[in-house]
Length: 503
Image (cartoon, rainbow, N blue to C red):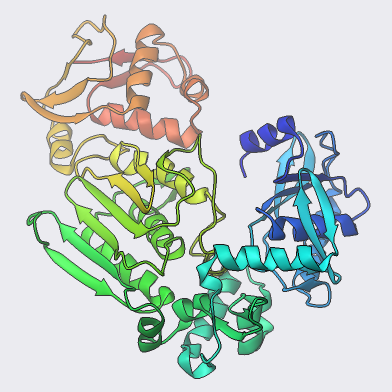
């Protein structure tokens, strides 16, 4: 969680999805009661080291590591939590204080702490003791999540238990070296993951639809969901039919692998540095889109899910149980779990993050990959559309061929409001040109840098980074891109030099 989001929660205060705990002398029982109530309601965020009024006091820094270990030990112990749950606390540093943050996703199960069920009402954790209330909680979750449908005649022979060693390893790696699944038997793991349970309305016990979809053999999956498939298509040349196609009808674990391989095969992996590390924009975007289409679709629908790559965009489509219709943005995002058991399984093995993070990641990294925002369309069919531009590069804003022309000494001119005397300013329509041929539009950051440098040629990179809210490495790459385009150069020393705009 970034500090801006944390400060926003502090200013709003405790809500149905936010809880503050002081935890000055360690973790008390009320922390686990809140975790239980979040699991049973809509999920939420819990902060240890914060008073009820939002004042940050922090937890003892030296004790924070042991507090996290104890927390994980309690929530993964069936004596305390039923069913058990795996959560990943994180440490936040805020104005000299250490805060422990725990994001709790909503669960498809009804959880109890020390044999007591808790529910979230406004900003309070309430004990649920009446039999009718407990029954209604089970029925509510059963009716909402079709992944919980019990198949009483399904057995371990119908599941791909050979995948479990790999799944354990993925969970351990994702958790940083320790995960409860590592020491569990196969049956214990399946129960801990919510793949085996009981339908309180019928009394049936057995493996549920989530278990069959995640780990079922192919013929068992087709028996439970005859229309289940994911259609992967490339339509760059033959837009009416396809250039390449794979129809995937296997379990969700291996479906993810096959769809990722398909994306790697047909999408360029553009060079990009985040801070000082190279990251794969292609893999990040494909991971978020593919995880969403596998986790959050309505599997009982006959609508075939699609992952389509075209020349100017890629998109996914899947059947959806929509609570509303319209376009989703980071500002109006209201995360709604479609299949929380499957989503939790994916989070445990590192193939997804917390609910809602996929939207934010796609908006962030799509800008770097194509220079444009993605689009999310909520309805009976859920669509994610990510624009593509093979010539766009965040670092350079030009394609490889044009980069060689500029590097070879070709004169560059600006077809906009900057002239040879540098007495104009850039605007959103400025293009770099070589020999009259358009190379690429400048990025927003490059536009702003040119404006700022023109107004103040003595401005430093540190000042530019502060104004544009970029990291030190981020501003260096923007400046390097402008230099390589031939639009900017510097004379004088590092501290007392001056910037010059060129033709």
